[in-house]
Image (cartoon, rainbow, N blue to C red; front, side, top):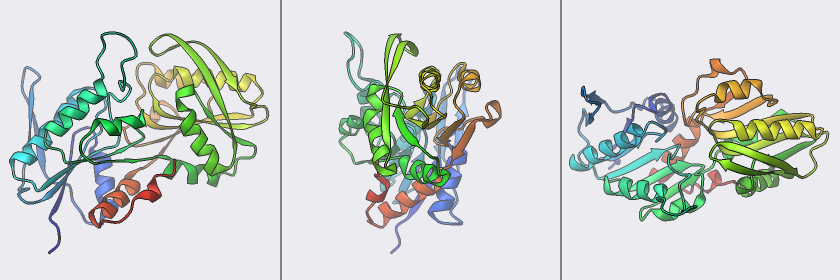
Length: 313
């Protein structure tokens, strides 16, 4: 007997969800759901078809505003109360992941709180990509499949045949990610060491490594305001680099990020559609879809096949 499967999409990831289900199996359709908003801002979700005995997949990136996270949890709760057999949340971008520890007194560990909330809502399994901190997987008592955008970034960079390529990290925290890329691309690496006076503002930065006459690719998980990446690109070019590109998984583009990127010395921003991005606001943006990647992962999970091929960084 074939397993009964249904896919639903939250309002933040409708277009990506269509790509995922199409790549999972041509002809597959998203389940019907409704989001009803009340005058005071409260809302309610409903799944408009039966899910009894089904394995339900809910696709939703939990990008701002926080209502996107709440919508995901309410859809999961609705599926659980409608007797779904299993609920898998596909969360390409996992919000609150930067709050993975207490870095000062009297602050929450937001990522752990979100993990508890998702589990309480009835979710049995998480599939996500490029968590800001790998240890967040340990915040869950349910399976978490953490895949990497390097699965699509590395082949793309190889196809560009850039001479004197070097991989760089915009901060010390991303050194592990940069090292993984440099290993698979067989290149050297550099690191930008920065200090901050407050969140999203860089006080000073220095480059560790030789970037002269190199085509540099800065790899990162999130493009938020873009200030760090723009500053790193400026210093790298001042050090004699030939070009600077950015490979960043989650394109948040907060506040003046589009303007900052347009005015930066970055020549290309390679990113994914984990979050919808308006490419008309910056002609440097090159979006690589993760629809095929997630479609393949879901197919392998359902058929009890390995997904280790998607863990290359």
